[in-house]
Length: 336
Image (cartoon, rainbow, N blue to C red; front, side, top):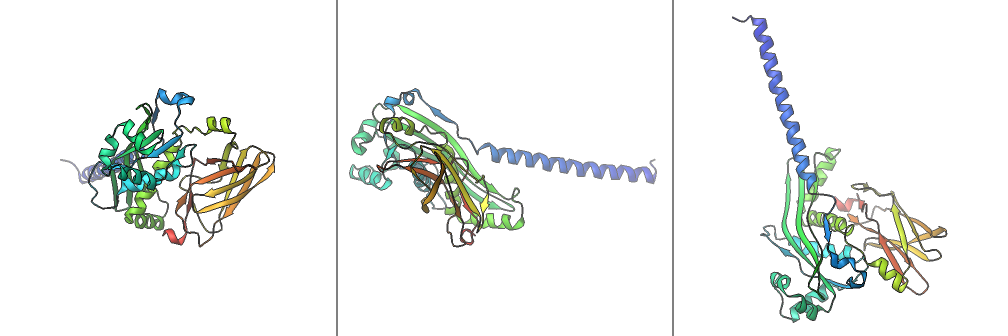
């Protein structure tokens, strides 16, 4: 028979083993959880087909067709429509001649096409006849979800997107990607956890944030024909644009956004903060190097925006380039 001392030691060891096993299980769950969350985010795997490699055959004019939603929309926020609008806003900075969404929808309606699924199933010849563009972008939102619970909040958009050449019927590039925005365990303070959850409860705002990140990540991979057009019509060339912005960095009042841009010398330079703040001057400090800044005000009402640099010559021709590694995210009272 075991002594009381031996039994006490065994009980303590057993308790510790149970505690350690629980801790180990918790860590495994955390690792698995973060693995699931992080697996769907970040770099977009975009496949470019051979048809796009021929610069002479690259489309110039592009229309973004209405996106479809492949599942029910219980929250009635139409994430596919929101995603299409957000995608267009970013795509318009690439070197294509893009058609306004309202014009696209009007032309399709006049042709008797109002069902989004039937639009996507239409032949390339019919779409070219209706829209008069070289290519279209088709988007299918496969799933969209928004969840807030405990100390965790996440929003997810999974979609298939491709570019269809209406002149040949060939798919020029395509991708299937899931973008997730999340908060909670990684937030440094309880105040930020609560704020992130409050933002996530605003479903429309949560989906828009996920759509922005999806759009930004895919724009990094979509081939931009601007270089070949530049050689043909001699647009001002921008070789690089850099800022002091970092991913997930929230800026406060009196913080300053710095922008440095390199390009053709002797031109007029400026930058935009999305469509919210335009024509912020960039000064050419040495030939071909332009620099400028913007100080955030307490009254600034914007949650996140892309930085777009512009060079303009005497003939009014402009070259544009956007900063791909982050967006300006303002931590102002209006976003709380």
